[in-house]
Length: 308
Image (tube, rainbow, N blue to C red; front, side, top):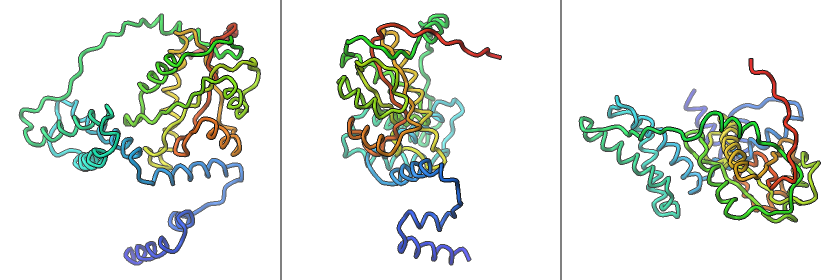
């Protein structure tokens, strides 16, 4: 019976378009129409994640290197574990060796994990686990908490641009955010052009109450190709959200205010326009947008709920 099912599945896969084959192979259900756009997005990104590309290989390389790295930090590490992960990582490093990603810092980091794993297999008695230097924070709880409480989502800005150096610094702190399996999927698309920023803002349904001058518009995205769909469909939002918090808190140390704009209610036309304005590739999931700038004045602090 299993062989017959497998044979029929192969025939159907050849005969049917992929989107229809998935329905036959996995079953389908009737859902209310208001789920339509959510399902369409999930299907779109799942299909994109199945395509081979060096960009997908880089994300998966970081994932498999991270899995090996966890074991290589253990003092009780023993040979024989995670062989399939090792083989996947070795294959990806080989594929990427002929691409521009060969010079990426994470490629060299992944190579070091591969070599350390191989050493463990060859000579477990002389193996010494990875061990970083102890870190003592120079930032007090009081200072960090004060910064968190002071941050405001202001909507009225001075006619003062954010420098390209500052934008680069803020992109850097986003890049250092934690991410699932160290895939580092976050990508920022930014314009420092006030006229283009206004056009981008018009794509956001929450883009009201702002001053006429919009200094800088930011789009926070995640590369969909490093995730297992639909199981991990919420992880891109989580990974990107960690980077967003880094950006907003760091920006405030530079006297720059950022206001998050939801993307949950976007229309198909709004998404198309925003992608065209900032050249956002289809593989990048738009998680949210933001307006950044130097505030003309600060908004009043809203009260917070009691922490029980």
